Length: 386
Image (tube, rainbow, N blue to C red; front, side, top):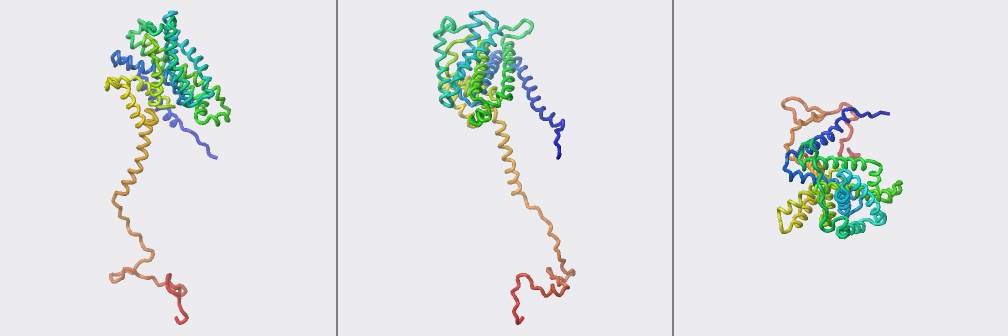
């Protein structure tokens, strides 16, 4: 029985690519605020904020298989939690982050109860009703939320020792929180909970037979997803410094879901690409057509989904697969069109008679009489007269 051992070089090569990718991404992210204008740095900061929200939605929809059209409501809950704490109680900015995360986690646990009996379009309609119901409720709670006028809070100021501008300091703070959130989502998906979510998404009956508790994991999926959205909402309040009910309409929930689908469902890098799509495409649509930006936005979504059905995260693999499938066809076509090579004739087993007057074909007469009397193959049968 042979034993297969992995060489150290194989492990080194396997870890080399992810390590280089992380180092390059970190270098680009750390150097970005020093290479762009303040408004562009603000846009990059908002991309990171949306990436946190889409990471939570990816846990629920991409890996949990449950469609949610109310993710903007959890986003709003986290934003208003931070705004109320800063405006009414004058707490520090850092204290609002765990409060928003914990509050939205509990809200997700309570809202995950309908997910136990609903699925598909029915669950999507219930979550959409939550997103539609929340903005009018925030307007009615004027003593706490400020009503239609909203709340204005102070932004996070950079310390004197940093030597950074306000937009640069905010970018680095949000970058640190986003890195922790993405790392948490990655480790969560590689844990037992993540494998259970994948099993529930693929086949609920088979997952239940394997011992997965459907009620627990469906509820936890909503709770984790709501927690990520609450953290993103808290970061939104830090960056913008203002919240109002009209900023969190149901259109935000639909936009977040569209961004995740475009970025790539079930992909760890899909939320980052989807966040860039959510941030930059509406502004591009506004520049293309001020009369109908929604039409341009919809056409861009259709175009992206036609080119990359699995999302932007799956586009490189799709291109490499198409190239790999086309290479054998190209090689085969080249072989068919190439000139035939001349092959030397094989040497005959029975040599012909040598000499200038020898014929091209010669027969060999066997010396054995028995063989000589044998009938040649294909000759007619002999008669008695013969």
